[in-house]
Image 1 (spheres, helix red, strand yellow):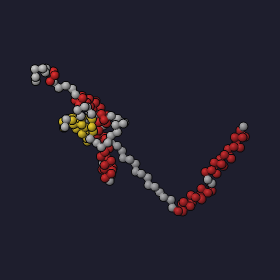
Image 2: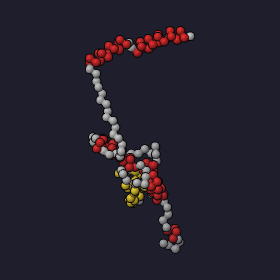
Image 3: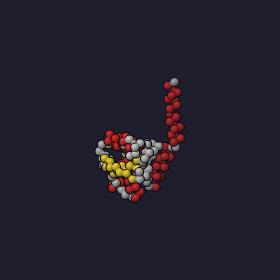
Image 4: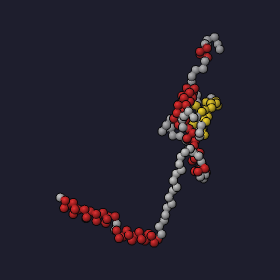
Length: 165
């Protein structure tokens, strides 16, 4: 410390980075008290590693207070990086689920969220046989085309309306 510097000038001044880390940790404590974070520093960035019910990606806070979440994609047009960071565990779970689906792993083997009922099975498409198709065509000919059915309904309705007037 030089003669011109006072103890308060040497004291750590709150930077954008430390302010953002404190803001993030306070918001997480408020919204998700079951999640804790370890802090480390790498290349001048504060690295936050979450621990909770789901796995967390690394969240990096740069010197200017910018946040980077170590998942492949998140849409900053919908939410800010800060807002996405609050649910980064869910982003990572979705990414893992997509990766597993691409790799051909069944959904039942991937745990994305807890206590979510499985999706109902898809209905199988039943193809008609030639005989069934001919039967359907015959019924359609008996009933006529849609235009014929509409015309018949109009022809039945018009006299009733004229009688009411």
